[in-house]
Image 1 (spheres, rainbow, N blue to C red):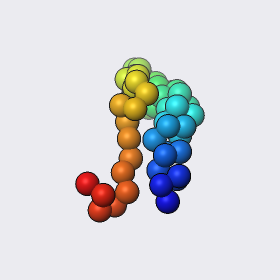
Image 2: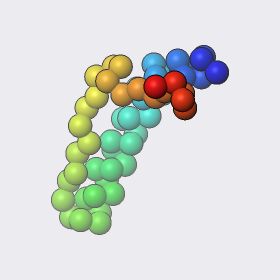
Image 3: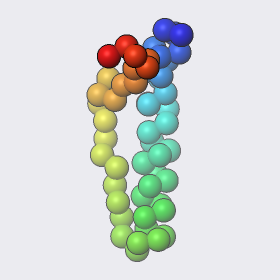
Length: 54
């Protein structure tokens, strides 16, 4: 289970965020007729933790 959280914290955000940022911008332009830009995140600024490990 530790390996899954390590992957989620190190690799997944950097792979997921560019597509998510583009999707939010594209959708907001189509629906609201204005850009909503998702901010950039630095590595390790976004992290996930196992339930009960706080």
